[in-house]
Amino acid sequence: MTHFSSAQFEPNYDEAKVPVFPIPDLLTTFSGEIIKNSEDWNTERRPELLNFFEENVYGKVPGTLDNASFEVVERNENALNGKAHRKQIEVTLQKGSRSLQFNILLYLPKHKDKAPLFLGYNFFGNHTITTDLNVLVSKAWTMNNEKLGITANHATEASRGVRAHRWAIDKILDKGFGLAVIYYGEVDPDKNDFSDGLHTLFYSKGQKQPKANEWGSIAAWAFGLSRALDFLEKEKQVDASKVIAFGHSRLGKAALWAAATDERFAGVISNNSGCGGAALSKRKFGETVGRINTSFPHWFCDNFEKYNENEEALPIDQHQLLALIAPRPLYVASAEEDQWADPKGEFLSAHYTFPVYGLFGKEGITSQRMPEVNQPIQNTVAYHIRTGIHDVTDYDWEQYLIWAKKFIE
Ligand code: GCU
Image (cartoon, rainbow, N blue to C red; front, side, top):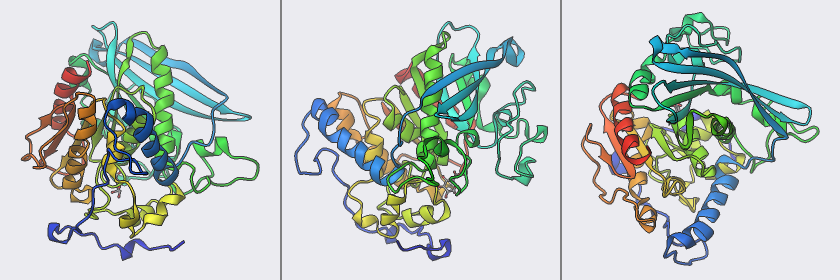
């Protein structure tokens, strides 16, 4: 296998240099059969695409757990100035003699018997998403970030609330939705080292890393979201048939893969997920397959490295990942200054799913013209590009809430 260094990948930001490339057809199977209806999509095309992404992009989950248990470690009926019910749940996953624990922070609107809900990961710990003093600080390994007050690879009180601007909790609750979040590092620490996290639970004797077709970190994070959904299904005040997977950036990639592999998710929001998420790989604009596999060798399965600097050889592209969400609502969002994530590639990818949504009588995005900034298109498939940088803003949440009220609630 050829190994590259990041320096070898000079990103292209020039539309004139985007290669002419084919859009792999959604409705023609790998053996050339034409898919004419939703049943054939479900029984033939969807499974073969899902299998391709499992074997060659994100990697397969190598087995099943022996047990998962959930313990409510903290609760309050009057959280956030009396607006919400708060619960903190410790999840324990077990396989043989090994186990892993992660924590879910759950806020539910008080005035609702059964709430639809957004479920997503955060980057630095549940306590970073709110100034609520009762949210437990994660004890897990955390990436250092001096600006956010995280040093020595562990979070402390210093980082409480530092990411609150990314989670419009009040707006979410006011619209009657709940929010559940997990610190992604508790499920699988984000480093190129397979000696810890979820992967280790499934190793056979002597195994030190996943096989070439087995899961990287994105698939492990996706698996974690599904286990959180297992808990939410038992939670009386949650409408588990209306759980929307949400994620920003690498965690948007994970949210998409979670919703693709687990059809219990009612919908998914990809916020600036970029390469290996919503963006088309074959455009080679901004981050590319070779670059992402070099900077983050642990995110995808090793088989994906075959496509480093070789996107032409991919028989699929990321619109086919998005189509695996159909007929469920899908929202793809970009930011104008986030060219690294290729906004146009994210838009086109969402657009190209429309024939599959059409098989189910659902409205996708039929126009190939990108909307202006801050002019969302909201059908079952939705898209917006907002002004500003790679981030999650109140503007993003306002659009997600309008769309979720219409298509999920
Ligand atoms: C890097 C990476 C992206 C990723 C982003 C993030 O920029 O190259 O693929 O989406 O980090 O997670 O913020």
